Length: 288
Image (cartoon, rainbow, N blue to C red):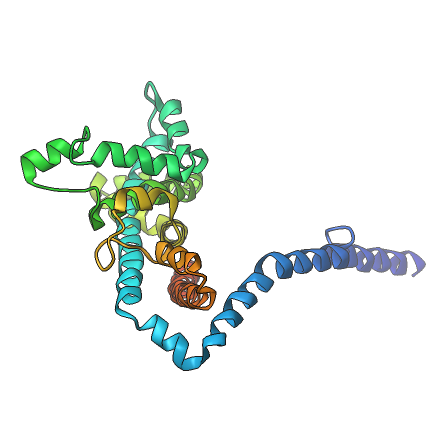
């Protein structure tokens, strides 16, 4: 009896230890929440409170101004297009890196991380030099097809693809490495073609990770500033992005209007990312 009681006591103690795997769980959680509040919540609270110095009518006037609406449409529209274009490119790059062995694969793998380390202003200057009307790529595109990339919304999309693509590649790549080949082999055994296997087996399994990469790339592209302002041309109502308009308002010492535009961007981004997260959660539940 004593032995059984001791055994049950040891099991209860083990369960208690399993409940708090980290030493000092409450202390660690408190520090985490405190830093989260200081770094994230307090700045967001300041951003949410500052615009109301103008009053509700003033905030609405700022957000419904034609120039502001054009900048918001361009920022979110270009970010959406860039993220959508980056999805198939990112999945393809991740597939090549993980499934094939060829000379220069490690070099290509390293180059994909370059946008993470490269200062955005340097990236903007490089892209502008390439796609300017007299640039290495801009001149042939303008001469052969009549396309002008730099100083147009198309240039913004190119710059945003540059910054969004690595997020999708690095998000999909580990899932693709861990993806078992058994399902692909079973599909091939049942007579599926390679295209059918990829479309019906591989891509559905990668869809949650792809949505995560899309969300990260989209969020990064919406707030991009340094690599865009050089190639955009920054013409109001044509190629002016919302982050640049915020800087313009700050230079005019109109801090409340700048905060109002930032609050609008924050709300739109939150709604889009929340919808993507709910979609991703529904997909994961469907696979369980």
